[in-house]
Length: 89
Image: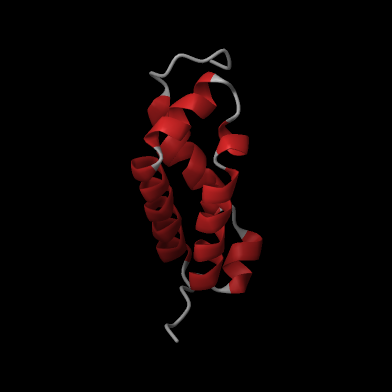
């Protein structure tokens, strides 16, 4: 069993890497979700899978006390998709 990540820096890097993978492999869904203001609904399964992977690799205290995964979704996916036309921005 691999050692759990126990530093904030490493946990943040993992969260951003997972979000980057979500972005890479779900471009069409992301575009649709942003256009229709349903991003979190349309990607619910993928986000939960990513969150579970993150939680399985990071020390529980970091998972509970930080929002690295949620922040990575916004910073890595949503902020970089500002060019997609949406009624929310």
